[in-house]
Structure formats: C-alpha cells, structure tokens
Image 1 (spheres, rainbow, N blue to C red):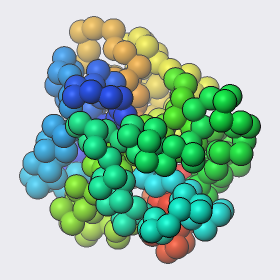
Image 2 (cartoon, helix red, strand yellow):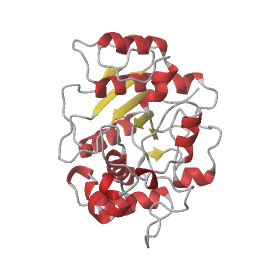
Image 3 (spheres, rainbow, N blue to C red):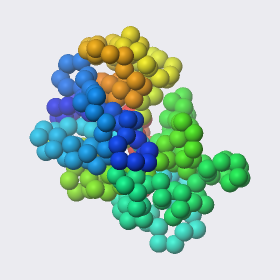
Length: 283
C-alpha cells in the first residue's frame, strides 16, 4: 500500500508554441471515478509546472508524465556519443537541455533541430533510421514482455514520436528538481509527493485491451471497469488525450494499490536510476 492520496496522469506535449491542446490532466482519488482537471482549458507547460507544485504541497500525490525522463545511456555509455561536455547522469542532463534550449514555454525543439541536430532522425535524408534509434533498459524490458514501446527519444518525426515531448519534459524536470521527488532518480518519499514516468499502453494492456486509442465514453469506461474503476462521468465524447489521461490515472491507482512492490521493479539498478530512469508500471 502506498501513502498517496491522489494519482494524477498528465498527457504531455512537446509542440511548439505557448498553449497546447495535446495536454490533458486526469485525477483518480480514493475509490471515485477518475476525473479530468479543467477539461476545457488549453494548458501551457509552465502552467502545468506551477499547478503541480501547488498540488504537491497540498497533499501527497503521485504525478505521472507520459514522456521519457532521459535518453538511453547504458547501451552506448553516453547520451550523445562524441559530444564534449555532455553530462552522463539524468539530473545533470536535464540542466544541460534546459540551458541549451531557447524555445518558449519549456519547449526543446531548438535542442533537437539545431544544437545537437546530427543525433536525431528527421527523415530519409539523414540516412538509415536504425542507425539513430536506441532504447533504454526499461523500454527493452517492456518490449520483451510484449508491451510494444517502439518510439525512440532520437526520432522526432511522425505522430507516434516522443522526442520533442521528452526533451521539453526534461526542462520541466529540471525546474522540479529539489521541490518534488522524481522517481527513480530520487528515492520514493515516505510521506510527500512524487513524479513518475508513465506509458498509457501499459494500463490498456492491464485492462485487456489491444492498446489502440480510445475515443468514446463507452470504450473509455470499458477500460476503466477492467482496471477496477468506476466509470468516468463525462457529458461529452472525449478525445484521445483525455482518455489516455483518465485510463492512466486509474491504472496508476490500481497498480500502486494492488502490486506488492510497484516501486521496486525487477531490473532497476542504481546506475539505471541515475542515468535512464524507469517507466512506472514496467515490473
């Protein structure tokens, strides 16, 4: 059993600009149905940061963000091989990304497109995609379990890409450092709030679904019931960002309360915790 009063999932965005329709926030509290937080609001990333800090101070909350907390390092020994002065721990790398990015609202497109362009695959003109993509140890473990996490932090193109969101998220994590625990880079606090990395497909799989996007109240509530949750009370048909957040919030709650050691997954070592992190739910 965990000490958290609430479980909050944040569907994140790495898009350029100051406001992002791709951001959605959902909360699962007690045994109540998960709910959307300000469902008609168009969030900025900096606004999410300020909101999170207020909520974290109010009560012990587990916050989940759907981006990679660090690029892979274990496989090659470096985040950006051949580059001088690039840190080799996640926390120092977040500071590096933040210092090298000049985009508005914690964006990081300039980091990928200009500062370290040669490390990222933007299309066929860059060569063979397989030469760019690498994966973290937790991603490889999830893939081996049939979880199908195939997006790479070095692939910033296409609808399924996670690179832009992840590097923007690293800027947010840098701003959170020292204010809220970030697991597993930080140990899980005994009483306070914490931030973890999430992946919606894990909870869809736990619900017995194939992993496709949910875009209706009926499909959403089918997934929630399978996760032991009450149905969501919505007066509108949700978009896939909202359903991702709602399902993941319910799934985080179920995982934290039902698994005997949700924060002690097999395969997580101190080195991986310092450098690559881990997705909450990969056991």
